[in-house]
Length: 106
Image (cartoon, rainbow, N blue to C red; front, top):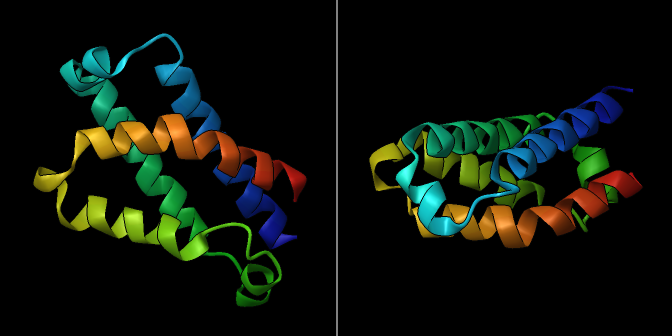
């Protein structure tokens, strides 16, 4: 049951990110400090939540890049000043839709 709640929380974070950026292009995103901070926060929460998944569940679901998600969280938390906004934008635009599909299947 715990893993189910974790997956639901991850889905909620992704949906927030998609909602925040649905009518925004990269320029508008990068120029809006509050939006950037909201997105970076939710990405870090996504990673923190992914790290709480049971090892057995992680192994049983290798289609989800659990370690990479947590790794992004670590990069965000430990190097905030060095965050590459273009990379953050590409993750939101390119990677999260596929991750959401995979999480929805669980």
